[in-house]
Amino acid sequence: MRWIDDHCHLDLDPVVAAEQVTVAAAAGVERLITVGCDVEQSRAYLAAARRHPGVVWATAGVHPHEASGGIDGLEALLGEPEVVGVGECGLDFHYDHSPRTQQAEVFAAQIALAHTHDLTLVIHTREAWSETFAILAAEGVPERTVFHCFTGGPEEARRCLDLGAVLSFSGIVTFPSAVALHEAVVLCPLDALLVETDAPYLAPVPHRGKRNQPAWVTAVGARIAALKGLALEDVAAATWETAHATYRLPPD
Image (cartoon, rainbow, N blue to C red; front, side, top):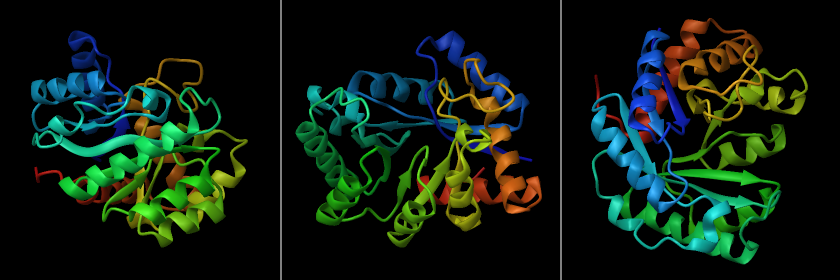
């Protein structure tokens, strides 16, 4: 089986990152996308993708936590071939590390960049569903849009899918308490579903309490297979194909 972790944050130390890539490959995670949360980190992840050609790709974006810093310098990264998406970007009303008005402005600006550069939009939304949908309605949903670390229930899943978006599920699906999320997995078509770790965060069962790593995306896939009553091989193959199509990754 071959897996893609479509959303992780590699260690910024090149030596540690290389080890993470090696361990992932040994677990069958042959490709991964490392996701930028501010301009400096996005630039570092572009360099990481260049160190691991054909294995690692990058996105460039400004997380809502960092929205108060603006997006100056971001667009310069979007023309690089290793950069396959804009984000993660969106709204986070749980922590409000940046003012909500600035979060909205920076989110809208990055949606515009995804349109301009024909790149995948990677969305982070937390406790801000209605506002997220409103901004997408105003700016237009990019052709390829991913709701990363999807944490909604069936209602939010249906709304996202109706927009033509793809849902990316993290280790949260392995938590027994995530009942509404499990319902969202069941209703999500396999061809609109991705798997991620969001490493180093959200380690899946049975690795709770440890620093997450891309190799453990297989645990996410296993839980999705169980929830949907599918063979693990089918989930691996489908998410591999969907990730390639969503991010326009080159063939093997």
